[in-house]
Length: 407
Image 1 (cartoon, rainbow, N blue to C red):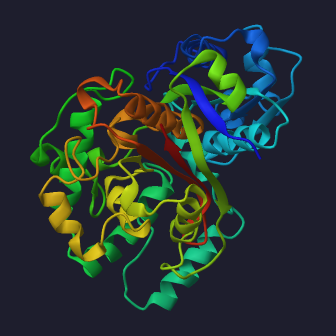
Image 2: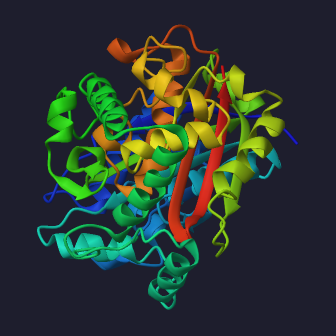
């Protein structure tokens, strides 16, 4: 098995762009990645493109890679369409990495995109709500609540109509961590404020304005303890990368970013809230990269809600649960902190166009390892990581990809 490196990245700004179609978004991100890599279109031997719900939102299904890439002159090569909920483009990265590692290709394109914004918010919520087992989800949650015996309800009025069903599930999970580790709503507001501070320094972020802790807490209730600013926004966007073998990478750059580990997994319809996909995949990723959690210098995690950030860090073994409140209060996750997290602004500020989210995370980590992240640059990071999950199966993520990178 050979080595695989990222030699070029590109992305659009994430946001609400009703005037742009999926071809526009993909073209912008891919052209930037090709230019950044210094290659030509003819050098690309295969393409892997991830997206979550363009069929529901735009009507385009089945041949999304072929449609979007042929419009910009990329055609004839093998193309794979990857659909894996919010983990779609990180799944595409896993496929591209596998192909290069196996020696099938020397240079591949990986891209992710999504058109999730619509004036009719219900349409967007319905698209997001399809990332569950629609035949059994309501019965499963009803039965699950009965087994808990706490009287704490998962779903409440308006779920799936005025907000995504996922927000109710995230809120339920979060309340459990609050009770277990002494985390408070204010701790989550601090995480949100930190994310928006980072997003304010990211020209690709959907929200580029700092907010105060009080503004977060007063931004409107969604499902306790979640407020509106703690929840990732709906939007559009695309991100891409060029992955090359070691011999090809050497032709174009003296500073490749190596993909040290790429681990993909799926959830199971379990009611065990301690046996999560993140907990199961984390050790596999660290083992594949030959490192321990303490060696990660910067990480982008899937903070569909702000509490998800600290929950993920605990489950990956990057932050001791009993120390989580202290780490948040003392700024350990700030750009200049002990473990910089979501320096891009994360999903809460950068945005969450689901099919583009994974590659958007990769874009940030590549910039960080190159030392090119501007005002949000961390102190000489050597190892970066991305955590990207999607969908719900049982009471856990349905799909997830973890990647570890090294300069």
